[in-house]
Amino acid sequence: MSAKPLRILGVGNGRSINFLRWGRRLTERGHEVHLASDRFSDVPAELEGLEAHPVRELETLMRVRGIRRLRFGPAIGGLAHELGVDLVHAHYMLPYGYWAARAGVHPFVLSPWGTDVLVHAQTRRRGRRWARAAIAAADYLVVNSDANERASIALGADPRRIRQIVWYAELGRFVPEAAEPHLRARFGWPDDALLVLSLRNYRPDTNLDVAVRAFAEVVEHEPRARLVLAARSGPLRADLERLVAELELADVVALHRAEWEELPALVVSADVLLSLARSDSTPASLLEAMASGLPAVCGIAPSLEEWVGQGDGAEFVPCRDPGAVAAALLGLLRDPERRRAYGERNARVVRERIGDPGLALEELYRKLVAA
Image (cartoon, rainbow, N blue to C red; front, side, top):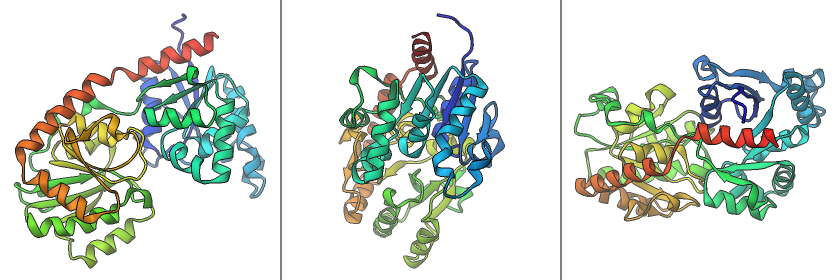
């Protein structure tokens, strides 16, 4: 196969770390990556090396309310032809995979991520219709879990044209050397504080209200416990701030916007990961916490058991049960030997299983382009 760099158009959410990490994987291998999106990160460094194309600026008709929704696909198709791209890869089916499907450009690679294929394509009529259309148009699917693959096949995907690649976990950054010795002091907490960390965004499906209510019980029994809700965005931040104040937890719970560059120090310095999302498909937060040697308390959700098990790196709890969450957290916080054993197991397993995703993506793309 030719070693000529590829010109690739990604269609997705330009504010999503996972989408931007996909682009960086490919630019690091020397490829030219363009992004088409209706939104982009407001942190310039996150877009460095990537060419951003706001879709609403691609056509005059894209500025007309009511007509715009009919033009996303054609506008993206026009951009792809103008750029002369070798391949289009859409991330998250709803709406980005559907837009890319309507663009009519091939080869077309589609990546369902999780909630799109596991929830919205199952529970929303339009979501199911759009998901089926996107899958039918795709030449190949790149998925991130067995659960994702099964759901995609149920929606019509050809199992012979699916490959699992976890492209977004940056395990090399999450090493013991990244720890920040005085991180707790940044939050005004003592150095012996036991730090529980959540990395999920402030959305209804992440059940952070349950995390806060559970933590109210945790600190009654373990005064050293502290909780950091580290997220970049979400509509429920104000609601969670009010809940923290109502439960008088402001001294032990911090809501903190975690930027890309500080994530390793934050994760490696924590003691336990907490994740209560109701649907999941191999989340980066879990993989990077595993690489950091953290044990986890996880809500019962698809795909997580592919990486950790009950009593085998994690404790599993019902997502909406504050009492069960509190009991699981207390069990780990009070047992440093169990935390250590879970953490060592998690670091070993995740590093054994995840290889070089940039190379895997490139090999698939070159195969499709050659065909």
